[in-house]
Length: 128
Image (cartoon, rainbow, N blue to C red; front, side, top):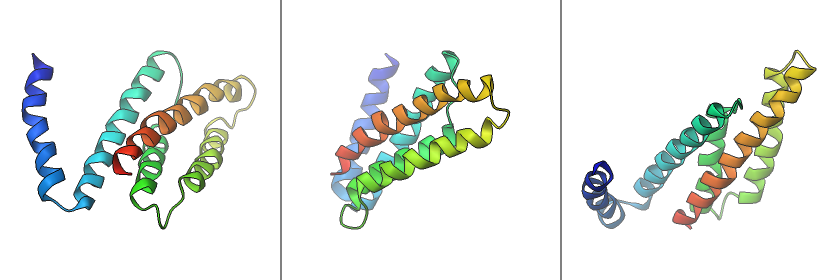
């Protein structure tokens, strides 16, 4: 019942944003959906024992999705390459103790990348 009520309120709001507001408003709406989706994914990953970079991953997810909106200026591949560099560097800083700590960071790196690709990249197609 809760999902039906959410749809009853959300769908007319979504229609109004798409129909009556400028395209930048839709970008903001999709960005909010990417952030929520990434945090939902990271909550699942944390229950499994992984330590994803939540803020960095959500920001990279929004950056990847927004490349579809600004496709003339930004390349999706460039943004994914930046994510490929930033997430392991953040893990190295967080796991400075080395050894087993660093090995545990690999799961966090994988969870962070998966959300960026799964949520950010796929939601970007809403903007394309």
